Image (tube, rainbow, N blue to C red):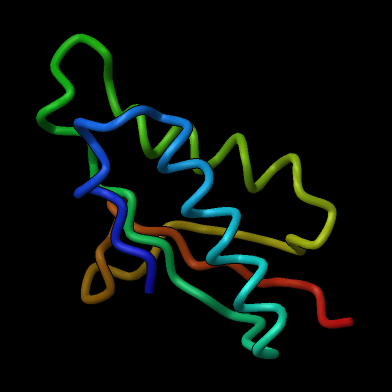
Length: 88
């Protein structure tokens, strides 16, 4: 589980790198279904859910992401995303 809200006050690039490293390591470890907790962005005020949007953009750009969707409520709901990765 990658827990991103702790990066909210840091640069978006740091969170982006954290997600990239997390996904690369998951594939290396042959873990093809992972959860990323990005938060709901409730404290982002007018900026909206910065980490949530960044995570979605990154997942859409990666060729090894087969699918992703918001997690079930018990897993973080709309503050988290479940990701299905392509095995190599």
